[in-house]
Length: 196
Image (cartoon, rainbow, N blue to C red; front, side, top):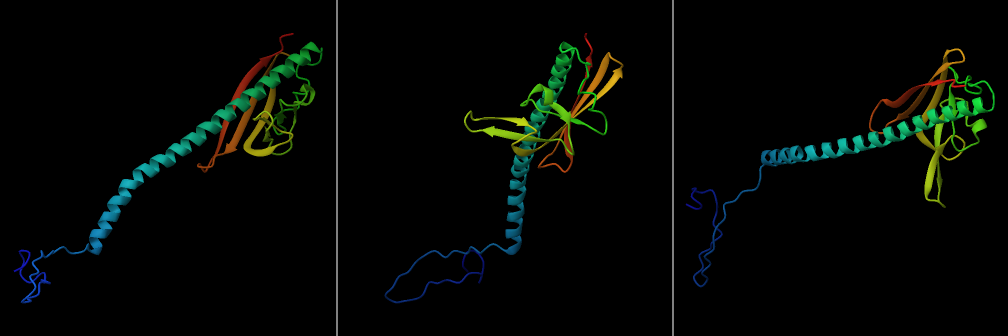
């Protein structure tokens, strides 16, 4: 009887008159297919948590990054509308001059990189925002004229609520997030007044 079990293991000890080979006999058996599958299932379960956590972290970081950029783009457009309103008043023009074309069905775009006279104008299509990188200054800026396409589009709508007194500005920045199936968006609504 070897290894405590009769006839389960064979001894490789041979009877030789001049050779004394006393060595231990191991009765270990290999893993069965079922044991291997259970071990793989446990390993997968242990790895699934950290992988899911990493995926959710990357998705959240991307969404937060794009939401921050969209909020800045929306606020920039609101500021450009305010500056245009102030310039119109100082130049003794109608306070909504060149802003009153930004109505539902015909949104406008805002570009802070050009002259104020052409900074706000009707856009055709999606009002796609572009990013221009300047290698000399190692910085970049968003605009509508030139540069690489981004995932963002920005639309400005102006609705005069009270004639010659109050207008509502609605800026919508939308983008398609890499990790989410829906289109994300940031919308800012601001009321401006004819202070003249």
